Image 1 (tube, rainbow, N blue to C red):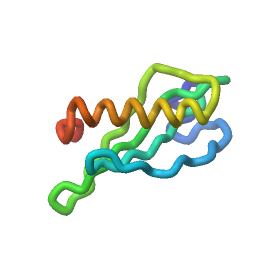
Image 2 (cartoon, one colour):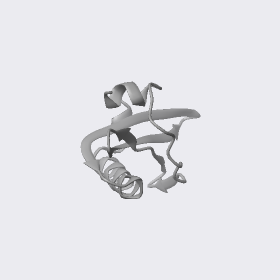
Image 3 (cartoon, rainbow, N blue to C red):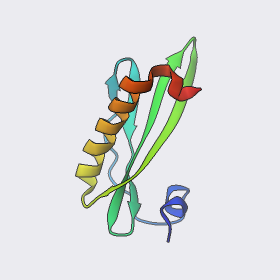
Image 4 (cartoon, rainbow, N blue to C red):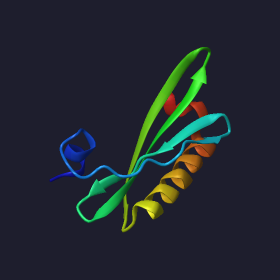
Length: 91
């Protein structure tokens, strides 16, 4: 089963959710996706801009063996994306 099918509700067990983390005014929700026996790096990045919450879904090809490691890597990649692109990720 592909990771996209799982991402959109097609299977896999539910993983424990990680707490949201704020970085430079953006809220990051680490949400790794189960992909076979590994976890794919993924996160949702949000920011309130002029009263509207903008959202960016980030997913990477990188996979890790444990959910905990994937959460840490998802947060790190999201922070790097925010630092590099700022609000342009919503554009």
